[in-house]
Image (tube, rainbow, N blue to C red; front, side):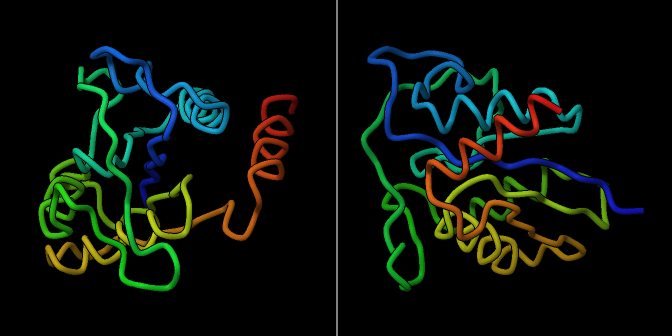
Length: 149
C-alpha cells in the first residue's frame, strides 16, 4: 500500500520576521494549500527554495530566494542543492515506501522534487501534481471546492 505525503510549495509573500514555516508564508495560494494539507490528515511539509524541505512548525527566517529554471530549464535553487533536498525528502519519508508525494506547487517545484529524489537515489516514490496546468485562480477554486465538500 502506498503512503501519501503532501508537499506544498513556499510562497513569495512572507512575514518580515522569523516564524514557523506554516505561518511565515502569507499569500492566498499558500494559505489555501496549507489549509488543505492540514485537513488532509496526512504528513505534509513545505518545499522552500531557500531551505529545501521544511517542516510546518520549523522556525525559519524570511528570505528572498526563488527557484530558477521554471521556463523549461532544469530547476535549481541558489542556496540548496537538489541532492540535499532529495536526502531531506528521503529522511522525511523514512520507511514509508512505496510512497506517493502529492505536490501542491508550480511545475518547477514538482520537477525539482523529482530530480532531487533521483539524485539522492531515493526509490519507490511517485510524484503526482493534482493542480498541474491550473492557473492561480483555478488552484484557489480547486481548494475552495475541496473545503466545501
